[in-house]
Length: 551
Picture 1: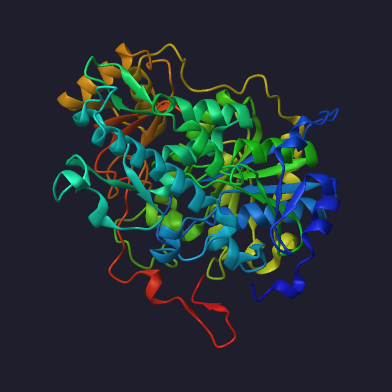
Picture 2 (picture 1 turned 90 degrees about the vertical axis):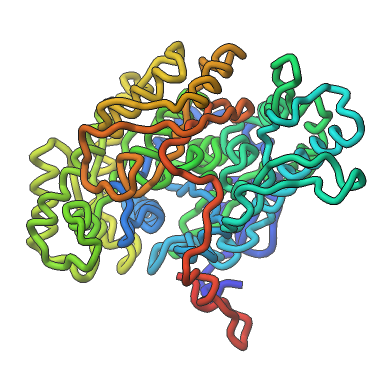
């Protein structure tokens, strides 16, 4: 139980604020509930809400505050008299026990019950993990019992998964110890947030679409070179059973009792990085404004939302909020990676990173507002430099102090977002590339237009793999580039807005059920490792059973 539980309202009162009839709620304790998908079968309101896409500059160790700003903005919109909902991803236990600790906002802009959301939140991640590993077990069982489908073991691409950072599981050998233990082969683990099933959960438009996408998962090829799908193994029904509760969005509340839907948790550096389409569709029926966070910088979460989620779901954002902080901009303008407090010249140099993200979003014809996440150490001069720069490149901006002040600290930002969103035209907003471009062409467009690369290099074996995907008919799918979040490039050490560099494509994997091709750039890994001093060493329970050490 959250130590803030005394300020929370019973979940039925939050549902009542939104006008959700009790028949569509499945309570999970006193403060959370799942919303049944039957809710989407009700007549659509005459006017749907407007989606606000929250993104940011390139992340740094200082943080940009996307989650806290998303929550604070939703609270500020309510203070402006607008009915609002925040739609957020579920935290992964990997980062919770690895680097960052909690992922539910902070200060006076959090979602509650925060400890529950950060940990085993209604079992969704566990359901995805189990469904994924069930399919892996069925694959190896099929090989053990004679391989009637003539699967080529060397082409099996379906790994196993666990929701924890564990580098030793990246590459493993299974089936050791004699015939009783199965067919020996190389495989590995990915973190649950990188599972294709997590992406499917986040992208499905309905229960029927969910079933279809699960069946479309390609686990490998047969010896004739044809795809073998999950449905061929008879896995679809059992995965649906395991995921029957997980597919329903979770209703919670913020520090100021603003409703929030927290559902699904794909990472943005290795998947598409946003909350579920189902939660967004529900929220757009329930509120005037839906504040939807996309992961990491705009080159990752926002690009993937606009090039993958938007075409698949039909949801178009009305405005993007690009979050920047003075400290992060200073780091983008310096190679020191140390405390940069008061370094005005580094701040000015780092503004090129903000400019690149703003320029990129303009390519989608998406209006923007820059939110300057203000810290106590920021001076009025530094804030003014950022605001003057935003004015010079033709974008609105406002300081945000939602961590310290909650919704009151986001009123100026909320008013500017409302003004921009109300005048926005959705028709011109479109994806960056055409679906009929081949896979290599799509990667090249993203690399040059979004990342600022001069060209791309595809390793020989990877080029053959991409050509095989083209030959199998998957060339029309969008691409989901997995790359470092710490740079616009594929090299985490290149800060600012690097130019004249080459994007290296090191691997390509099919996610047919999710509906995209994962293209891995540089040394990006799908299973993180723990740092030398992980957050796990700081977490504990006090004598009253309260979690300590979770930021």
